Length: 315
Ligand SMILES: O=C(O)CCC(=O)C(=O)O
Ligand SMILES: [Fe+2]
View 1: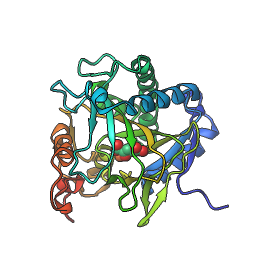
View 2: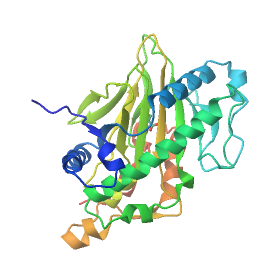
View 3: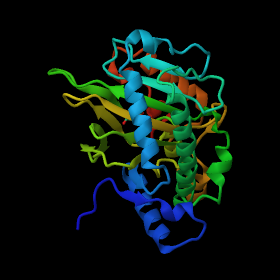
View 4: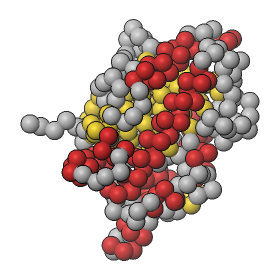
């Protein structure tokens, strides 16, 4: 049988203490997926279907309110990212609106008052997804052969993590961009998508759809892991294509990194194996800010959009 391109991993063996064979096989699959294109999916991750459905329903209710109502929760703080409700600027080809939240106890958060249950459910989803982020980072740590808990200690501040609820409106006859091709800046991203579909991953120059499956969470590796591993693990190129008729709703959880962290290829993937670094080091918040500028002030020429190649060292 030909293996599906985007493998689905049963996460349950990793949520227990003991080592077993299922883990070994899953680790091989994850290593392959992360080396080739940086995407896989997980099931049996411990988040109840009920919570996922509730969060989706509340998000739908919120996004279906009038602009006036939604704008009541527009960003107001000087947070590093705009917490609260925003829409992409009208000159952006990306057609989506979103609600961005920091961890539950963060002072940056601007939550809508309505629907009233939204805050509690989103905070619960945040807390549970955050735990999975740590588990996945730990699995990646092991797949990369790093010393135990290396990434956990390097990335030990969860206050920069964010979760974003998205709505993508239906495509029209002449445009269907939801989110242009990009790679995520952070360490690991977890995505919950509804049944509409439209998320696509670039693999061997072909766009492969990540077909929605109830209860399944999509995982992708971000730029930080790509740099640390000196490109052993790939930060996947992906995009969202809007379909006709129905709006698409999703939640993306970004297992992030403290902005003051210095990011550069680790010696395990350079000096120690005689390879030259593929990136120069950078302060994480500097890169995150540059990437945010792409969204707030989209450059006129596509080639001026900043991504990881900004720090790439040519061979
Ligand atoms: O909405 C999605 O499915 C993905 C969103 C995404 O790729 C992002 O926000 O970086
Ligand atoms: Fe993304």
